Length: 149
Image (tube, rainbow, N blue to C red; front, side):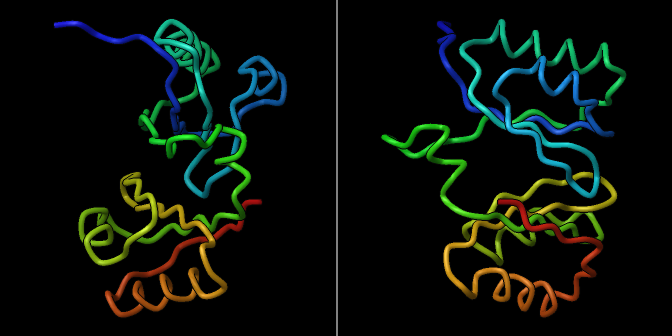
């Protein structure tokens, strides 16, 4: 088996909040405060750099919740991808990622027991309201919501 070790776009979630000094050490990752912790997104050149970042987070005493490879559309740079518009981060009660993902399209779903966080891009003026309406229809309780530029 051959493994390709090239650049990767990642989303890393940890419990807790990063100190500003640690944020600077992680060089270039976009840090977003979530209701259930902190999210780091960005492009890392290879697996060595990925493990270095994960090790640094662990040394800082942060609990790792998830590491996911994020697909970026062909021809779109990381900076362009992160600047396509604001995002809504909606946290709902329960461990319901599969049900929500099956019912609502065009969003990322992350399960952080005992809740689920939805990352919703503003693709239209009504995108957030459509999702909130669907969550109400599915009888989910919204715990928290943030808009991130």
